[in-house]
Length: 326
Image (cartoon, rainbow, N blue to C red; front, side, top):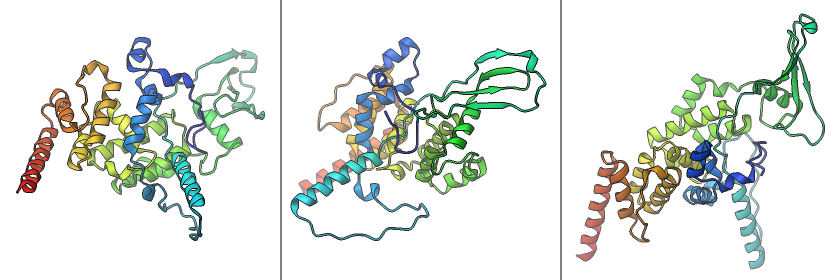
């Protein structure tokens, strides 16, 4: 399937949709592949909170803004425009996949000692045939010592960017991803900007992309700035990353403090899908979200700040009930 319109070129096998945590553990598969499970995808889409005002807001992209258009429409035309807007929003909210880092390429075809010293430079041979993708294109390298091998990832990325450039993707690493510049952007809380640019520059299994993404998500989690990514394509991957790393206490606290208990329940369900070994098997009853959350917190985070958040929430509900009764 084609991932993240015009950015990533990697293809995800459909079979990954059938994985579960127990199977991944039994066959030694990384849990990141559970990102494509249908139940996981539904939860991530639900907690993203599609808000059209945010999805279609103007972004700081350095481009000239288009003048708004005003039209008189019939009811049928209006409904059709709403349908098209819904379809467009689904495309804009397509989530960057969370997958394991790619394995290093170390494959030697042959070593010819007769070619040793023939040249001080490497020769790179790239298949530019029509129909090939960045992932399956054949790229081989002849080293000065006569070794003929498959190109490593750095060499593959450079050749693909040179022969098949993508809009916004540079051959060299952009300065904004250097540590000092990236740190400054994180301090300014430009999270969506960082993640959007990373999606354009890198493939989702590139270690550089994974490092940038994780640094961004960790900064958000540390500061509790989860709503900065609300209604963006990066919110779901962030929630998945936190649940995968057993680190959902801060986002649960945010959902309790903002009275979004329904989302808190969904995050807990996601955590249970990814960590069945925790054996949290309390059945959720509609309308009893706080009881469900409290049971989970008592089992998983008994000594955390979440306990105080639950007490404050209950006290607030009690005061409101007393006020209404009076």
